[in-house]
Length: 108
Image (cartoon, rainbow, N blue to C red; front, side, top):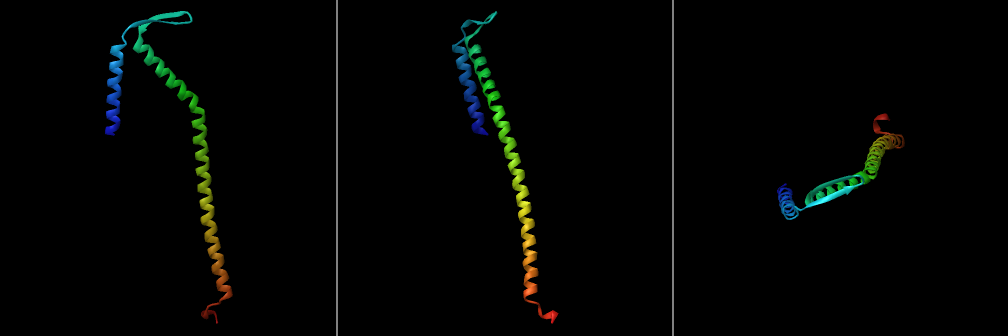
């Protein structure tokens, strides 16, 4: 946890230095809109939009993988139950077979 906090602190320091060094105002034009904004703000906004677009593109595959893992875990549980049920049945059958092949002295 301390490493995460230290990394976040260093990142915040680097962002602050970047913002102070890149405080020039630049024009931003998109289709019919035109505004003025600081270079650092424009770059940070672009970074955030890039991250969001990346997450949106990864979401379908991630959801599909989680559903597949869930389905496979359910199958494993069912197979383990079948295995334990089969093992008990085989054990009971072998006990009955042993008793039939080797009757105990009590039955004589």
